[in-house]
Amino acid sequence: MKTRYQNRIELLQGTLDLLILQTLQWGPRHGYGLSQAIRANSGDVLQVDTGSLYPALHRLEGQKWITSEWKLSENNQRVKVYSLTKTGKKQLASERSRWEQLSDAIAGVLNPAGKENL
View 1 (cartoon, rainbow, N blue to C red):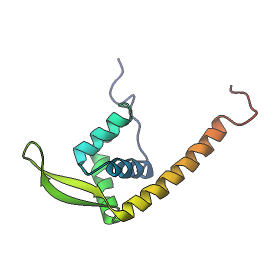
View 2: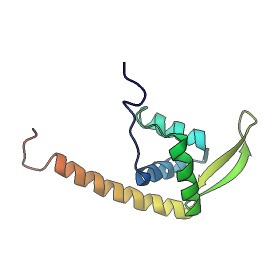
View 3: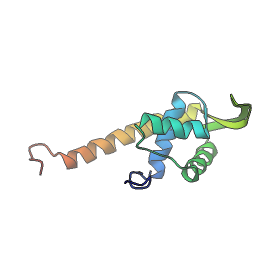
View 4: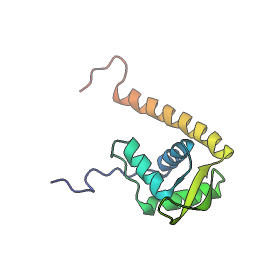
């Protein structure tokens, strides 16, 4: 039986930032909602632990890419809700461009033109 940790993918800091910014592009969310959206949109492949998520949120807030405010949840609990700023939208566009370049470069190495796959 596979354990939870065998299928986990550890995210690099820059990749996690990209995923958070992209998720907030779809609308404001609290931390748990962010982690659930990332998990759901990745087909349950990407799981972001609180030990990675909250330091990333604080870092992004410090860079002024996101803002936060305290609100009441549907369950009447106080939650911190994060939103993307204008600067964050610009950063998201930049991060997406870099990701596409990196993805294309890796694809070129994995499947070079004119070479047979092993």
